[in-house]
Amino acid sequence: MVTIDEFKNIEIRIGKILEASIHEKARNPMYVLRIDFGGEVGERTVVAGIRDKYAKEELEGKKIACVVNLEPKSVAGVLSNGMILAAESNDGALSLLVPDREIEQGSRVH
Image (tube, rainbow, N blue to C red; front, top):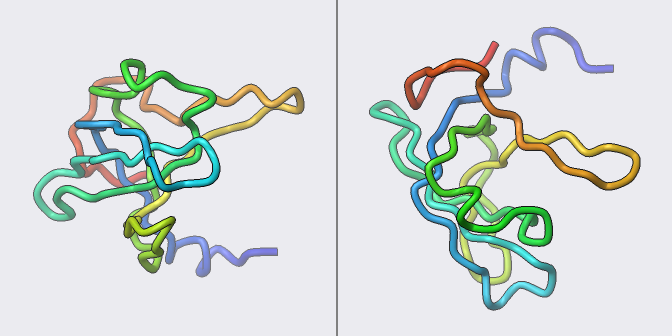
């Protein structure tokens, strides 16, 4: 179990996907996403294994929830600075977590 204090350490912010490009060197179908989180966090590069679930045109311009305080990790030569959040059903359908109302980039998720 995770304590409430441990959960509070996870920083989740709303970001807008500015660009999605195919990660050519990845073994699995991945995108390299350029995401804008607004003034305090700025732009980040995030590698996401969702290329088989979403077309890049579906992603660009979409606001999504992301963890922004993970330790950066190199994924097939690209440094990823965050993690997108999504729900996956038992049959493998994927749904990105998106705000249900217009909200500014960088807004914290509680």
